[in-house]
Length: 194
Image (cartoon, rainbow, N blue to C red; front, side, top):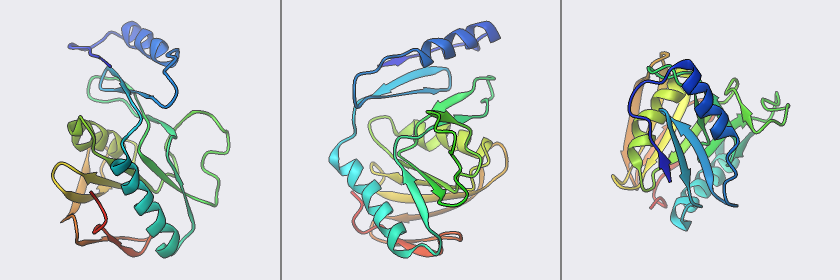
């Protein structure tokens, strides 16, 4: 389900949209996000999608030079877009260092301060991951954004956020290795991605 807003909202309308969004009671397993003025409700992902996340987590656990937690349903509050709307997103993976505890407050929605990397695996609407979420994560200052694009069969690492977008992109087709810089410091093997 998607609720779309075609034109810029007044502050009052934006506040009402956010209030309605926060009051949603989604069915178990579904995720609701607020992206570019749209309330987006998505069903649980398919097994191929989840295998990609599991593969990344497995490689991080075995090869990272630092210990991290991979959170799969952490809600992030992302700074306002060009239309002045704050985003509420749930990345497929949010990677945070074990120390310090970035989300010690145990709130469902948190600012992404201290997040090392976010992961998205494309599904039915890949443009959100390719554009809206990428720009939102850059505005939030998240240092690394890893996009597994199943439709285009490639993995992209965005880095160097400048407050509007990422300034650097490394991209490989599925089957090739993608270097993850420190604090990870290993080559991500994409041969199992699908």
